[in-house]
Image (cartoon, rainbow, N blue to C red; front, side):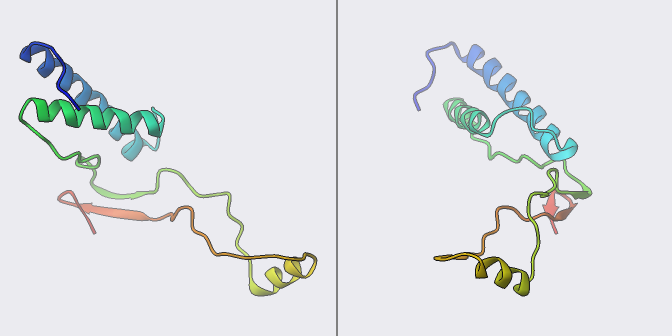
Length: 120
């Protein structure tokens, strides 16, 4: 990424404003369980911010949960999965032909305990 053709003061203001916006999104997602922006846009903004920080000579590692503390449940509960047992799978597959079953985990619900900004 090339650096914007802006005066240094403007680049500093723009980078700080973008960093504050990312902090608001991170807080909403990690502390309130609300996604305020699409994942694709969030990733693009992080990439742009990292580039601008490099242009300013102050690269900063993104720490989305730096203000997290205590215990919290996963922000999005996984409700679309139905658990089953081996007899249930056998009944289901007995009525079908050419079935291939592959275990898959789309998401894992859990919680983390944050102590001094480190997950335990």
